[in-house]
Amino acid sequence: MTSWAVVLGALLTCNAHALTADEALGMAVGESDARIEALAKAVAQGDEKTAAFLQALTDDAVKVAAGKVLVVKDGKGQDPVSGQAVEVPPDAEDVMLNNRLRGEIDTALAALKLFSSDASLRQQAAMALLKEPDASRAPVLEKALAVEKDAKVLALLKQALAAAQLSHADAALRLSAAKTLADSTQPEVLQLLNQQLSAETDVAVQSALKLAIAKVQDSLRWGDRLGQLFTGASLGSILLLVALGLAITYGLMGVINMAHGELMMIGAYATYVVQVAFRHYLPGAFDFYLLAALPVAFITSALVGALMERSILKHLYGRPLETLLATWGISLVLMQAVRSLFGAQNVGVENPSWMSGSVQLMSNLQLPWNRVLIIGFAAAVLLGMSLLIAKTRLGLFVRGVTQNRPMASCMGINTARIDTYAFALGSGIAGLAGCALSQIGNVGPDLGQSYIVDSFMVVVLGGVGQLAGTVYAALGLGLVNKLLEGWTGAVLAKIAVLVFIIVFIQKRPQGIFAMKGRSAEA
Image 1 (tube, rainbow, N blue to C red):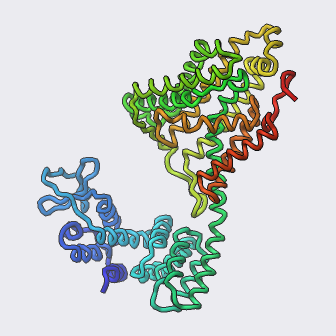
Image 2 (image 1 turned 135 degrees about the vertical axis):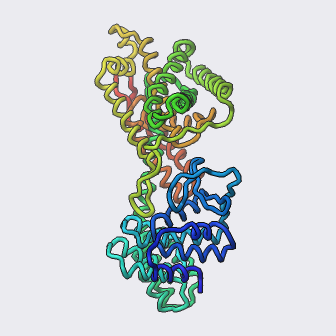
């Protein structure tokens, strides 16, 4: 009789009683066979204390001292039977689990959850058994099927049982299992079907497996497509954030700012500093550090950008080559300054709890919250920029200087001051981009180098100084790049996008949207 048969027999013939100290000790120490037997007997109770103790075993939170078992969490001991707090002796030893025992405990936990009064727990257990099928689990699945009333859980249990029977010696059972699994929408089931097809010898079962594979692939196809679209939109939103500030400075002053990526890096490091400050001084409010980091990142990068413009760039207007070389030199200085202050190694920026995890839309489509919120943040920054440019006095002056600088100067606009404001604004937006990027990756001195070329491509493709063009170009490049990656790979996708941009600019030098104004060339 297998260990799972023992567990099943205990489940079917159980008379519920509380977990005892002897049962807890039997599961924690001894030979593997004896511990598995003790586990099977303990599972017969099906009470919450047994489940909690098994979970503690899985989490390596159980110790043994003087023939007694205790659960230790955060340095505090607890009796698994009574639930009372106990002292942790200095000679307490960790309970060791081999792979066999861990598998038996996981299976026992799933079995306990299958008979839980909570439908959501039963659904989780059925899903776990579906993703890790085992022929020895078929009896307990049949028992759970006999008493299950919830339609969703019932469907998962049928598929889990079919997965367990897919490699059965009886061809009729394999055939029935293949037909049942054809209705599944789980990627793991597709892998299971393919594995069985490679080993299947029965012609009828082979045919059923092929049909099931085709049907499951069809059900998963939309999830894959939507996943690619989301990934492309996520990349596009990042490119938009990075290129938005560059579109303003490049469009207004014609400055090829090679230090734009380093301004973004400064915003990311400002976020890191705020995180460290919150962890040290306000640990209870750590989840709100990102809200404080946004204005800090914007102001820090904006001040650095204004200092760059006032001290160096204002003397180089009209000389694009000198401006390019000067900003490239500034980028090297900024990178070395960051290395001196924070070190050459990457620093980690943690997500707040409300940005952690993901939302499950389909079985093969999970949307990480940090990327979902970054897409929303990019949209908010774009809306704010559009309103600032279209509705404010500063925006009016910026548009006037962009379209016709001499005429704007004749109308009394201080174009030098507008240049500083606009450059600081573009630099601040780069800081916001760095703050956003810190939530999806490590922060290091070379962070900006990864995005500077792509951001310039976005600006040139969209049309110099055109926010609408920047939006179309960023989202378009993000989507096209991710769609091509699925066919050609990352490297060839990058090359294809670059070739497309070169051809497009040859045919339409002004970009997607041409600049409007008296000075715009036809």
